[in-house]
Length: 243
Image 1 (cartoon, helix red, strand yellow):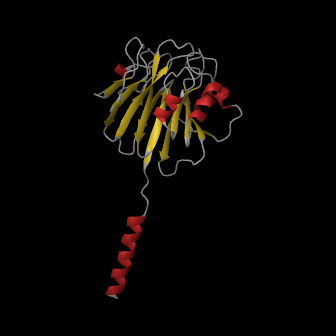
Image 2 (cartoon, one colour):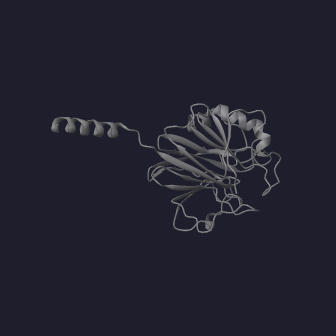
Image 3 (cartoon, helix red, strand yellow):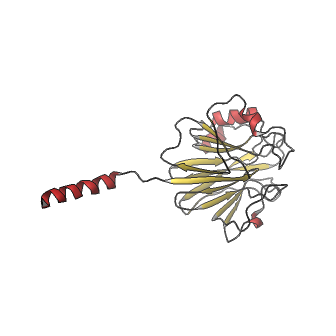
């Protein structure tokens, strides 16, 4: 009887040791180009912090890392974040140059790729690439043109992309589709920087961008929690509310 019990206990330990542990991360949308990314280890990243028109960050929000794709008022409100985050500014103050960044903070590797800010190529914009939890996530900032071969090579294939689709100050919705294909986005595309009630001064809404697309997933609310081992194998368009 004792031998049977020991054998049973051994089997239970082996089953538990082989069981997969759920590894979760999350993305929360605050409008425009501003997201909070939380890795499975709890590292908090805020992209392009916004306090503009009717877009607002929650009071007292904190972060470990803040990235700023370019120094414009609708993308650079670092002062709206509490605590003492490490701030990574992607461009010089006059947005004429992209600041080279390639560093590891906690478990997150972060690097920049230079790009033009708008379709007229007036000024520069930093594409931020994040590598964590075995995935690659890209925040394109105010990307103004489709990508060159050099940029595609520097970024590589992408799991999750945060991409502007509203036009005027950034790529058009048609160019956004082209960029998604250029980078062979494998898992999820999250549109940003589009026309809303909070900021109507853009040509395209997210619905304009989504017209004709399949695999669209609308999340109730502004937070997307995902299991890193269960990300879709086929590209999905994930839509978050900024409210």
